[in-house]
Image (cartoon, rainbow, N blue to C red; front, side):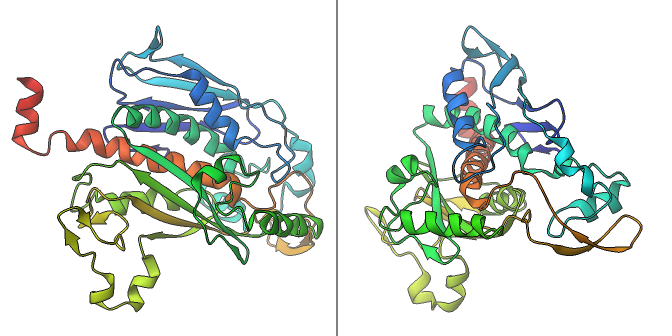
Amino acid sequence: MNSFGIKFKFSTFGESHGKALGCIVDGVPAGLKIDEAFIQSELDRRKPGGKYATKRKEADKVEILSGVFEGKATGTPIAMVIYNTNQKSKDYSNIKDLFRPGHADYTYFHKYGIRDYRGGGRSSARETAARVAAGAIAKLMLKELGIEVRSGVLSIDDVEAKEKDFEFAKNSEIYFLDKTKDEEAKQVVDKARNEHDSVGGSVLVSANGVPVGLGEPLYYKLDGVLADAMMGINAVKAVEIGEGCLSSKLKGSQNNDQIAKEGFLTNHSGGILGGISNGDEIVLKVYFKPTPSIFKPLKTIDINGDEVELKLEGRHDPCVAIRGSVVAEAMMALVLADMVLLNMGSTIEGVKKYYN
């Protein structure tokens, strides 16, 4: 399955070392102003080549092929393409018959019977560039409604942000949320890279200005779809909404968000009740495993079932959570854009308001 969404829907295509990757976004309302510079700026946040990311140099220059005329969406599918320009497939030639531990090589091979050893092919996190491009379109639509989606790195290894400063995170080299812990977190990433290893991390994703009523119970609940969207990102192993796992250790009197005239007094729910947005800030925590591509010798098997030792080469992120935060933000925007359009027909008053 390579598509996501119902009304605001996108499909992605391409492989890590193929000619290009891209997306087709369908359901974009006609007349929406399409800011190409903004779309490119979102891709620039995710692109490789930074000090704390893979050394693969990709401009990630996006090209819009259809669906936009004179700077506005036409209401037809918007197709975007990003050409790969710095593939080094030879870096993987020595492991073309080996399964890399922690990667999807083993499962993809047994499911499809084909081994694309060039950086994992379709299973590579390189595909997420297309999601970020689609997410930028969603953000442009949400901006028209006053909805803002933000993200930042909450933890790297055992270094955890105490402050949640999204403005600081925008300018941090690792998108870290706490300026007092930023350097310490960088040192952890550097140490892992120098030791030919990797580290995991967690990301905080937030949405403000979300109206009450988004979410389609029972089987397309807002929290359920958000969890689905986040778990579909490469290397994500867990998602929490609001208090998340901690709520299982609280009493009802502690976890319930009491209500006053001015609104909810707390936000343990993470802005979602019964699968529907309650108008409060939507808060998610997304947990990424350590990047499986490391340069330590590892035991594995080849496609013939023989035991071998893997010695990996190439260019890889020491902490995938850093750039993963941008992808999680894009997926949050895509879900909310879809929910906004779905909600328009939830009442007869809404339908009549449009047609009258």
